[in-house]
Image (tube, rainbow, N blue to C red):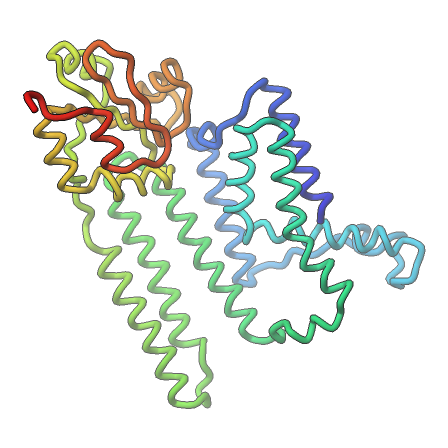
Length: 348
Protein backbone atom coordinates (compact mmCIF):
# COMPACT_ATOMS: atom_id res chain seq x y z
CA UNK A 1 0.00 0.00 0.00
CA UNK A 2 2.90 2.33 0.75
CA UNK A 3 4.30 1.52 -2.70
CA UNK A 4 1.19 3.05 -4.28
CA UNK A 5 1.64 6.30 -2.38
CA UNK A 6 5.37 6.27 -3.09
CA UNK A 7 4.42 6.23 -6.79
CA UNK A 8 2.22 9.29 -6.24
CA UNK A 9 5.09 11.03 -4.44
CA UNK A 10 7.41 10.28 -7.36
CA UNK A 11 4.81 11.68 -9.78
CA UNK A 12 4.64 14.85 -7.67
CA UNK A 13 8.45 15.22 -7.81
CA UNK A 14 8.58 14.58 -11.58
CA UNK A 15 5.96 17.26 -12.24
CA UNK A 16 7.79 19.78 -10.09
CA UNK A 17 11.17 19.05 -11.69
CA UNK A 18 9.80 18.97 -15.23
CA UNK A 19 7.75 22.16 -15.03
CA UNK A 20 9.93 23.96 -12.52
CA UNK A 21 6.83 24.95 -10.56
CA UNK A 22 3.75 23.54 -8.95
CA UNK A 23 0.88 22.48 -11.19
CA UNK A 24 -2.36 23.95 -9.94
CA UNK A 25 -5.33 21.58 -10.11
CA UNK A 26 -7.30 24.37 -11.73
CA UNK A 27 -5.06 24.16 -14.79
CA UNK A 28 -6.46 20.69 -15.44
CA UNK A 29 -10.07 21.67 -14.95
CA UNK A 30 -9.85 24.62 -17.35
CA UNK A 31 -9.71 22.10 -20.19
CA UNK A 32 -13.23 20.89 -21.10
CA UNK A 33 -11.77 17.58 -22.30
CA UNK A 34 -10.42 16.89 -18.80
CA UNK A 35 -13.79 17.58 -17.19
CA UNK A 36 -15.54 15.37 -19.76
CA UNK A 37 -13.04 12.57 -19.15
CA UNK A 38 -13.46 12.85 -15.36
CA UNK A 39 -17.26 12.77 -15.68
CA UNK A 40 -17.04 9.60 -17.78
CA UNK A 41 -14.58 7.98 -15.37
CA UNK A 42 -16.78 8.85 -12.40
CA UNK A 43 -19.80 7.42 -14.23
CA UNK A 44 -17.87 4.22 -14.93
CA UNK A 45 -16.88 3.97 -11.26
CA UNK A 46 -20.53 4.39 -10.30
CA UNK A 47 -21.44 1.52 -12.62
CA UNK A 48 -18.85 -0.60 -10.81
CA UNK A 49 -20.37 0.24 -7.44
CA UNK A 50 -23.80 -0.72 -8.77
CA UNK A 51 -22.36 -4.13 -9.65
CA UNK A 52 -22.65 -3.74 -13.43
CA UNK A 53 -19.09 -5.00 -13.82
CA UNK A 54 -16.29 -6.23 -11.57
CA UNK A 55 -12.62 -5.31 -11.44
CA UNK A 56 -10.52 -8.34 -10.58
CA UNK A 57 -6.87 -8.56 -9.57
CA UNK A 58 -4.78 -10.07 -12.39
CA UNK A 59 -3.71 -13.63 -11.71
CA UNK A 60 -0.05 -12.86 -12.34
CA UNK A 61 -0.22 -10.16 -9.66
CA UNK A 62 -2.28 -12.18 -7.20
CA UNK A 63 -0.22 -15.36 -7.24
CA UNK A 64 3.48 -15.30 -8.00
CA UNK A 65 4.45 -18.05 -10.41
CA UNK A 66 0.81 -19.12 -10.78
CA UNK A 67 0.78 -20.81 -7.37
CA UNK A 68 -2.11 -20.21 -5.02
CA UNK A 69 -0.37 -21.71 -1.98
CA UNK A 70 0.24 -18.81 0.44
CA UNK A 71 3.29 -20.62 1.77
CA UNK A 72 4.93 -20.62 -1.64
CA UNK A 73 8.14 -18.78 -2.40
CA UNK A 74 6.35 -15.74 -3.77
CA UNK A 75 4.08 -15.11 -0.80
CA UNK A 76 5.60 -11.70 -0.13
CA UNK A 77 5.12 -10.64 -3.76
CA UNK A 78 1.56 -11.94 -3.52
CA UNK A 79 0.87 -9.88 -0.40
CA UNK A 80 2.51 -6.85 -1.98
CA UNK A 81 0.40 -7.18 -5.12
CA UNK A 82 -2.80 -7.42 -3.11
CA UNK A 83 -1.82 -4.37 -1.04
CA UNK A 84 -1.03 -2.29 -4.12
CA UNK A 85 -4.31 -3.24 -5.76
CA UNK A 86 -6.18 -2.53 -2.52
CA UNK A 87 -4.81 1.02 -2.46
CA UNK A 88 -5.51 1.47 -6.18
CA UNK A 89 -9.08 0.17 -6.03
CA UNK A 90 -9.87 2.35 -3.00
CA UNK A 91 -9.32 5.55 -5.00
CA UNK A 92 -13.06 6.06 -5.71
CA UNK A 93 -13.55 6.49 -1.96
CA UNK A 94 -10.32 8.43 -1.35
CA UNK A 95 -10.54 10.54 -4.54
CA UNK A 96 -11.32 13.79 -2.71
CA UNK A 97 -8.48 13.37 -0.23
CA UNK A 98 -5.97 12.31 -2.88
CA UNK A 99 -6.71 15.23 -5.21
CA UNK A 100 -6.66 17.68 -2.32
CA UNK A 101 -3.34 16.34 -1.06
CA UNK A 102 -1.77 16.29 -4.53
CA UNK A 103 -2.92 19.87 -5.20
CA UNK A 104 -1.56 21.06 -1.86
CA UNK A 105 1.70 19.15 -2.37
CA UNK A 106 2.26 20.87 -5.71
CA UNK A 107 2.33 24.25 -3.93
CA UNK A 108 4.76 23.18 -1.16
CA UNK A 109 8.50 22.46 -1.10
CA UNK A 110 9.27 19.08 -2.63
CA UNK A 111 10.32 17.50 0.68
CA UNK A 112 7.15 18.66 2.44
CA UNK A 113 4.81 17.58 -0.36
CA UNK A 114 6.50 14.17 -0.57
CA UNK A 115 6.26 13.69 3.20
CA UNK A 116 2.54 14.60 3.17
CA UNK A 117 1.76 12.07 0.42
CA UNK A 118 3.69 9.31 2.17
CA UNK A 119 1.97 10.09 5.48
CA UNK A 120 -1.37 9.65 3.73
CA UNK A 121 -0.16 6.18 2.79
CA UNK A 122 0.84 5.51 6.39
CA UNK A 123 -2.65 6.49 7.52
CA UNK A 124 -4.31 4.11 5.04
CA UNK A 125 -2.01 1.16 5.73
CA UNK A 126 -1.78 1.52 9.53
CA UNK A 127 -5.17 -0.13 10.26
CA UNK A 128 -4.20 -3.17 8.16
CA UNK A 129 -0.87 -3.43 9.95
CA UNK A 130 -2.66 -3.25 13.31
CA UNK A 131 -5.08 -6.02 12.34
CA UNK A 132 -2.18 -8.21 11.19
CA UNK A 133 -0.29 -7.62 14.44
CA UNK A 134 -3.37 -8.10 16.64
CA UNK A 135 -5.81 -10.46 14.87
CA UNK A 136 -8.11 -10.38 17.90
CA UNK A 137 -9.17 -6.86 16.85
CA UNK A 138 -11.08 -8.41 13.94
CA UNK A 139 -13.81 -9.30 16.43
CA UNK A 140 -14.43 -5.58 16.99
CA UNK A 141 -15.13 -4.88 13.31
CA UNK A 142 -18.68 -4.92 11.95
CA UNK A 143 -19.54 -8.26 10.46
CA UNK A 144 -19.79 -8.43 6.66
CA UNK A 145 -23.35 -8.44 5.48
CA UNK A 146 -26.00 -6.83 3.36
CA UNK A 147 -25.18 -3.40 4.79
CA UNK A 148 -21.92 -3.45 2.81
CA UNK A 149 -23.77 -3.84 -0.47
CA UNK A 150 -26.21 -1.06 0.45
CA UNK A 151 -23.30 1.23 1.35
CA UNK A 152 -21.57 0.40 -1.91
CA UNK A 153 -24.61 1.27 -4.01
CA UNK A 154 -25.19 4.45 -2.00
CA UNK A 155 -21.67 5.56 -2.93
CA UNK A 156 -22.60 4.85 -6.55
CA UNK A 157 -25.39 7.43 -6.36
CA UNK A 158 -22.94 9.91 -4.81
CA UNK A 159 -20.60 9.43 -7.77
CA UNK A 160 -23.50 9.99 -10.19
CA UNK A 161 -24.13 13.33 -8.48
CA UNK A 162 -20.46 14.17 -8.95
CA UNK A 163 -20.72 13.28 -12.64
CA UNK A 164 -23.71 15.63 -13.02
CA UNK A 165 -21.71 18.38 -11.30
CA UNK A 166 -18.77 17.91 -13.68
CA UNK A 167 -21.05 17.94 -16.72
CA UNK A 168 -22.74 21.16 -15.57
CA UNK A 169 -19.37 22.96 -15.70
CA UNK A 170 -19.41 22.52 -19.49
CA UNK A 171 -22.54 24.66 -19.81
CA UNK A 172 -22.15 28.43 -19.78
CA UNK A 173 -25.83 29.23 -19.22
CA UNK A 174 -28.18 28.61 -16.32
CA UNK A 175 -27.23 25.79 -13.96
CA UNK A 176 -30.89 25.06 -13.10
CA UNK A 177 -31.31 22.15 -15.59
CA UNK A 178 -28.42 20.40 -13.89
CA UNK A 179 -29.96 20.92 -10.44
CA UNK A 180 -33.01 19.13 -11.85
CA UNK A 181 -30.79 16.34 -13.20
CA UNK A 182 -29.10 16.09 -9.81
CA UNK A 183 -32.45 15.81 -8.11
CA UNK A 184 -33.40 13.01 -10.51
CA UNK A 185 -30.40 11.07 -9.14
CA UNK A 186 -31.47 11.81 -5.55
CA UNK A 187 -35.06 10.79 -6.29
CA UNK A 188 -33.90 7.48 -7.78
CA UNK A 189 -31.80 6.86 -4.68
CA UNK A 190 -34.77 7.58 -2.42
CA UNK A 191 -36.97 5.19 -4.40
CA UNK A 192 -34.22 2.57 -4.17
CA UNK A 193 -34.06 3.10 -0.40
CA UNK A 194 -37.86 2.78 -0.19
CA UNK A 195 -37.96 -0.50 -2.05
CA UNK A 196 -34.65 -2.19 -1.22
CA UNK A 197 -33.47 -1.25 2.24
CA UNK A 198 -35.95 -3.48 4.05
CA UNK A 199 -37.45 -6.85 3.31
CA UNK A 200 -41.20 -7.42 3.17
CA UNK A 201 -40.98 -9.51 6.34
CA UNK A 202 -39.00 -6.92 8.31
CA UNK A 203 -40.55 -5.51 11.52
CA UNK A 204 -43.15 -2.82 10.87
CA UNK A 205 -41.21 -0.24 12.90
CA UNK A 206 -38.09 -0.70 10.79
CA UNK A 207 -40.02 -0.52 7.51
CA UNK A 208 -41.76 2.68 8.58
CA UNK A 209 -38.47 4.25 9.66
CA UNK A 210 -36.72 3.50 6.36
CA UNK A 211 -39.64 4.62 4.23
CA UNK A 212 -40.03 7.76 6.36
CA UNK A 213 -36.35 8.67 5.96
CA UNK A 214 -36.47 8.14 2.20
CA UNK A 215 -39.65 10.24 1.88
CA UNK A 216 -38.25 13.08 3.99
CA UNK A 217 -35.01 13.04 2.00
CA UNK A 218 -36.89 13.13 -1.31
CA UNK A 219 -39.12 16.02 -0.23
CA UNK A 220 -36.33 17.98 1.43
CA UNK A 221 -33.94 17.59 -1.48
CA UNK A 222 -36.72 18.53 -3.91
CA UNK A 223 -37.52 21.71 -1.99
CA UNK A 224 -33.85 22.71 -2.12
CA UNK A 225 -32.74 21.48 -5.55
CA UNK A 226 -35.87 22.26 -7.58
CA UNK A 227 -36.07 25.89 -6.46
CA UNK A 228 -34.78 28.08 -9.33
CA UNK A 229 -31.53 29.75 -8.26
CA UNK A 230 -31.62 33.48 -7.52
CA UNK A 231 -28.90 35.94 -8.51
CA UNK A 232 -26.34 36.83 -5.86
CA UNK A 233 -27.06 39.74 -3.55
CA UNK A 234 -24.01 41.52 -4.95
CA UNK A 235 -24.73 42.63 -8.51
CA UNK A 236 -21.74 41.45 -10.54
CA UNK A 237 -21.16 42.70 -14.06
CA UNK A 238 -19.25 40.63 -16.65
CA UNK A 239 -15.53 41.26 -16.52
CA UNK A 240 -13.57 42.88 -19.31
CA UNK A 241 -10.43 44.98 -19.29
CA UNK A 242 -12.47 47.82 -20.79
CA UNK A 243 -14.98 47.67 -17.91
CA UNK A 244 -12.14 47.66 -15.39
CA UNK A 245 -10.42 50.63 -17.05
CA UNK A 246 -13.70 52.55 -17.29
CA UNK A 247 -14.43 52.12 -13.58
CA UNK A 248 -10.90 53.16 -12.66
CA UNK A 249 -11.19 56.20 -14.92
CA UNK A 250 -14.30 57.21 -12.95
CA UNK A 251 -12.23 56.90 -9.76
CA UNK A 252 -14.42 54.10 -8.40
CA UNK A 253 -13.16 51.21 -6.30
CA UNK A 254 -13.43 47.89 -8.13
CA UNK A 255 -13.53 44.28 -6.96
CA UNK A 256 -12.89 41.55 -9.50
CA UNK A 257 -14.04 38.08 -8.50
CA UNK A 258 -12.09 35.40 -10.37
CA UNK A 259 -14.24 32.27 -10.27
CA UNK A 260 -15.00 29.07 -12.16
CA UNK A 261 -18.02 26.80 -12.36
CA UNK A 262 -15.92 23.75 -11.35
CA UNK A 263 -14.44 25.51 -8.31
CA UNK A 264 -16.27 24.30 -5.18
CA UNK A 265 -14.49 26.86 -2.97
CA UNK A 266 -15.75 29.63 -5.25
CA UNK A 267 -19.36 28.54 -4.66
CA UNK A 268 -18.73 28.46 -0.90
CA UNK A 269 -17.42 32.05 -0.99
CA UNK A 270 -20.44 33.12 -3.03
CA UNK A 271 -22.72 31.70 -0.33
CA UNK A 272 -20.74 33.01 2.66
CA UNK A 273 -19.80 36.44 1.31
CA UNK A 274 -21.29 37.64 -1.97
CA UNK A 275 -24.84 36.44 -1.33
CA UNK A 276 -25.18 38.52 1.85
CA UNK A 277 -27.47 41.59 1.62
CA UNK A 278 -25.35 43.47 4.17
CA UNK A 279 -22.32 43.22 1.90
CA UNK A 280 -24.33 44.33 -1.13
CA UNK A 281 -25.54 47.41 0.80
CA UNK A 282 -22.03 48.21 2.03
CA UNK A 283 -20.57 47.98 -1.48
CA UNK A 284 -23.36 50.14 -2.91
CA UNK A 285 -22.74 52.84 -0.28
CA UNK A 286 -19.05 52.84 -1.13
CA UNK A 287 -19.74 53.03 -4.87
CA UNK A 288 -17.86 49.80 -5.56
CA UNK A 289 -18.03 48.29 -9.04
CA UNK A 290 -18.18 44.48 -8.88
CA UNK A 291 -16.93 42.46 -11.84
CA UNK A 292 -17.16 38.69 -12.30
CA UNK A 293 -14.22 37.14 -14.15
CA UNK A 294 -15.19 33.61 -15.20
CA UNK A 295 -12.09 31.46 -15.80
CA UNK A 296 -13.93 28.16 -16.24
CA UNK A 297 -12.37 27.52 -19.66
CA UNK A 298 -8.79 28.04 -20.72
CA UNK A 299 -8.28 30.81 -23.26
CA UNK A 300 -11.16 33.03 -22.14
CA UNK A 301 -10.34 36.76 -21.71
CA UNK A 302 -10.71 36.48 -17.94
CA UNK A 303 -8.46 33.42 -17.85
CA UNK A 304 -5.76 35.11 -19.92
CA UNK A 305 -5.96 38.23 -17.73
CA UNK A 306 -5.59 36.16 -14.56
CA UNK A 307 -2.65 34.23 -15.95
CA UNK A 308 -0.79 37.29 -17.24
CA UNK A 309 -1.35 39.56 -14.23
CA UNK A 310 -1.42 37.31 -11.17
CA UNK A 311 -0.83 33.67 -12.23
CA UNK A 312 -2.74 32.44 -9.17
CA UNK A 313 -5.47 29.80 -8.80
CA UNK A 314 -9.12 30.55 -8.09
CA UNK A 315 -10.85 31.54 -5.91
CA UNK A 316 -9.23 34.96 -6.02
CA UNK A 317 -10.63 38.44 -5.42
CA UNK A 318 -8.66 41.48 -6.62
CA UNK A 319 -9.45 44.89 -5.10
CA UNK A 320 -8.54 47.97 -7.15
CA UNK A 321 -8.41 51.25 -5.22
CA UNK A 322 -7.68 54.30 -7.33
CA UNK A 323 -4.16 54.19 -8.81
CA UNK A 324 -2.78 51.72 -6.28
CA UNK A 325 -1.70 48.20 -7.11
CA UNK A 326 -4.52 45.70 -6.61
CA UNK A 327 -4.88 44.03 -3.24
CA UNK A 328 -5.38 40.28 -3.57
CA UNK A 329 -7.62 38.08 -1.44
CA UNK A 330 -6.84 34.45 -2.32
CA UNK A 331 -8.93 31.60 -1.02
CA UNK A 332 -11.46 32.00 1.76
CA UNK A 333 -12.18 35.30 3.51
CA UNK A 334 -14.92 37.05 5.46
CA UNK A 335 -17.13 40.07 4.76
CA UNK A 336 -15.25 42.09 7.39
CA UNK A 337 -11.89 41.35 5.77
CA UNK A 338 -13.18 42.48 2.39
CA UNK A 339 -14.71 45.72 3.70
CA UNK A 340 -11.60 46.51 5.75
CA UNK A 341 -9.47 46.40 2.60
CA UNK A 342 -11.94 48.50 0.61
CA UNK A 343 -12.01 51.14 3.33
CA UNK A 344 -14.72 53.34 4.88
CA UNK A 345 -17.47 55.18 3.05
CA UNK A 346 -16.21 58.44 1.50
CA UNK A 347 -16.73 61.34 3.87
CA UNK A 348 -16.69 59.18 7.03
